[in-house]
Image: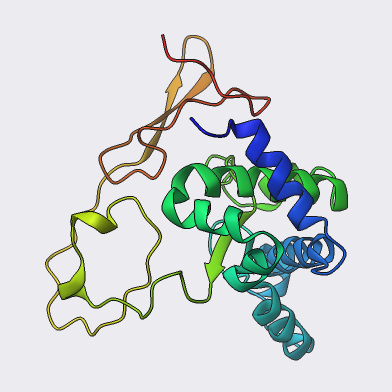
Length: 218
């Protein structure tokens, strides 16, 4: 493995803290917008301040998903470190995890305990227990042009690509369980279980403990 998780976190932390990009303020805005939209009293973010909120949402890339979201243009990462940008494109799963850890560290500094406050403000603590800031990448990749579905091949597996096309037919979507919560009346405790399959983005990556350190395979 060329870079450990801690090394990648340090490199992405340096990128996010670079004064040229002002990401700490963007991250704080993403968290604030998400809290405002998640609050029942705001009615999903509509109201007198909707105009300013929409502008901030467009700037940060935050959407009304289950987590605050920060949009990072690949052009900014490429201008900061072209080699790091290419490594992310060729190995996105490991690098995205490190990038999101670095963004989470900054979010904890800018808005201490944001993940706990978001859990408390949610109507269902079980659904919000994994609330963390997520990263959305934007802009072109290093390919000469966006690919269409017919150009997808084995060479694009586990790489970051841009696909353009029109969906003319969609098969039926079968819901699958990703998480379940079990209650034991005898102990009065809840237990949460997560389920993964071949589509899980963390599949094949080393497990990470509560402190963010990769656990060695045994």
